[in-house]
Image (tube, rainbow, N blue to C red):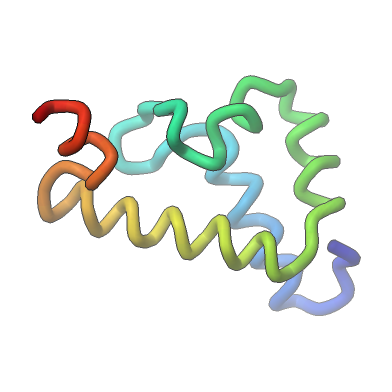
Length: 84
C-alpha cells in the first residue's frame, strides 16, 4: 500500500497495531489472519503492511471487527466449532 493520504496512514497504522496482539484478549489463534504476521519481527511486520493493498488492509480490519464483536457477544464461530 503506497501511503499518500492521512486516511491511508491511519489504515496502515491500525493494521500494524493489530499485528502486535489481539486487543481484546491478546491471543493469537491459528485461524486469525494476523497469526503468522504476529510471529515476525516488528520491522518485518511493518514492511509487510506497507506492501499490502488498501483492499487487503480493509479485509483484515473487517475480519478483526467481526471477531471483536463475536468475542464480546460470546465465542467466535471458529471456537464454537472446536468446543462442540
